[in-house]
Picture 1 (cartoon, rainbow, N blue to C red):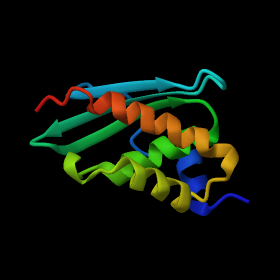
Picture 2: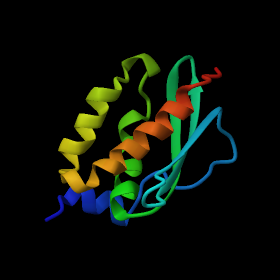
Picture 3: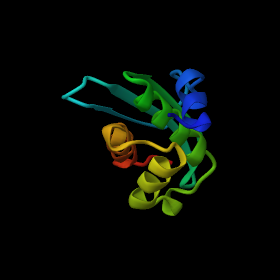
Picture 4: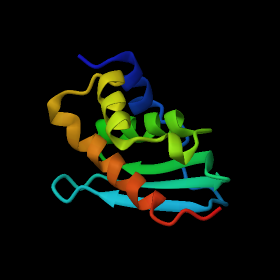
Length: 119
């Protein structure tokens, strides 16, 4: 029913926790289900050097946040396209329509994180 990649990220989230040092953060909450995520990034010269998250909620939200933290580490901000990223998460994690809200939570948190880029 769930892909191995999904199960891996849901059961063993990568880059989980709040680091001592970071340059940017953003948070989002789904008002319907109550899932929450906060992203902590270290960005230098428009490149994401570190990407950590604290996510509370369903396995789908945890998997999405964990997966995106792996996908975007060492990427330049200018290389990130939200539409493409959203589709990649949906496809690679093999998410059903009932889990689209998990990707939207991640998208909202990223938008908040990137609002005020400080290098």
